[in-house]
Length: 336
Image 1 (cartoon, rainbow, N blue to C red):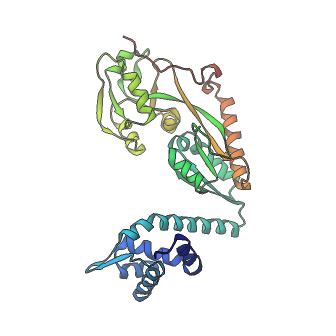
Image 2: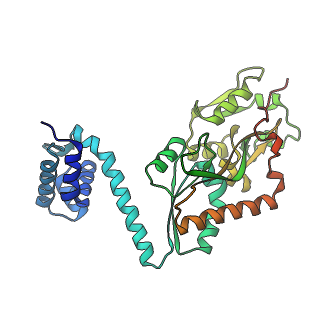
Image 3: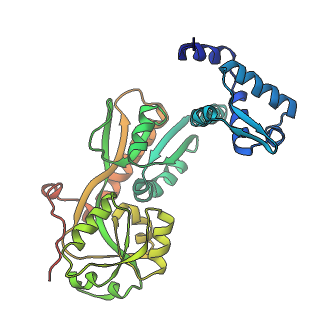
């Protein structure tokens, strides 16, 4: 009769070691017992014995042996994502302990969207680091569902993101910066020199598109549906930021993107905004944080970000969004 999951859990808790996880991951990556031994500082026989011990513990074959080395079995492939997650947790724990040994005040695990990183954290985190050098910030970029998964798994202290449609249970959102869609191009694009742009001007341009399903693509589709003819589009369709910035900087293209996503290149003057029609506002960028149980370091970072955002809004009042237009601003319509 097969054992239950509880039996295997108790075995792993009683007899499992982090070293076992390290061996599995290294074997799967390197495909060789000898290379694994060299990589993690063990002897070849020790790696083989560790693997045999773990296979006996789990009562399943984890690797198939062949002439050139080893390859993961389907059972091992199922375990690899869990093993990677476990090792990431161990590494994070080591960082936390190390920070405490250096007389630090703790570690803050932050997950941020691309727009939040570019529009908020690039400005504010360096100043926070200068003011609180004893606090470590572990920053990971993720979007949408990956952010919510990190919250559900307890892997994050703060999330800097756009306001989600539904807040996770026990969490609250504090807005930091308003956001809107902008039409962007390189600073020396011919349209950047036009004083009073009309919809027909941009309808003739070549556009760089994001994939279908991305909100900014929907905004572009709504705009383009009113052009007199289908717009010309560039053959590369991507949401890779590196590729987007490269193409926008070196090709005469237009793109519809959130302001905060492009803020660093706009501030540097590398890209410019083409103003046509009314602004299309979207949910603000802000902090998603637990209502209770936050550590001291996370509390300090959250308070710092909120204060820094408030100072910036007072110094740049033109960025404020009129309350009455917060959710009702229509999408821009092309005019003939």
